[in-house]
Length: 101
Image (tube, rainbow, N blue to C red):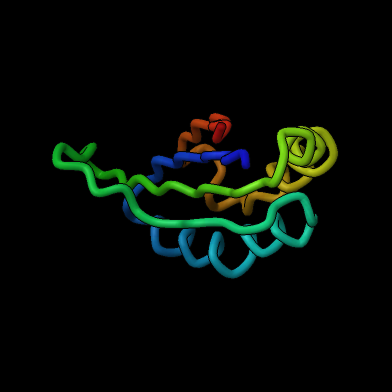
């Protein structure tokens, strides 16, 4: 199993709109690609939060590394480009891969 983690720090004033878009549009679109078998989504509880920001984490579960690599090559660019304009430039994303052995 491979986890694809995406940590997003976003301006607090648009965080709820972004969260709703993630849950109802973006995550379902990612899952519809067929490269993942599940996901987890939640807000990071930080004892020292960044002022004016909220942080979220999405974990996508792929059966194999080749599935994740196929998603990253074939689907990720299109889905990242589909971010609504109201969120552009108002968040920072970190991505990493965690292989479970």
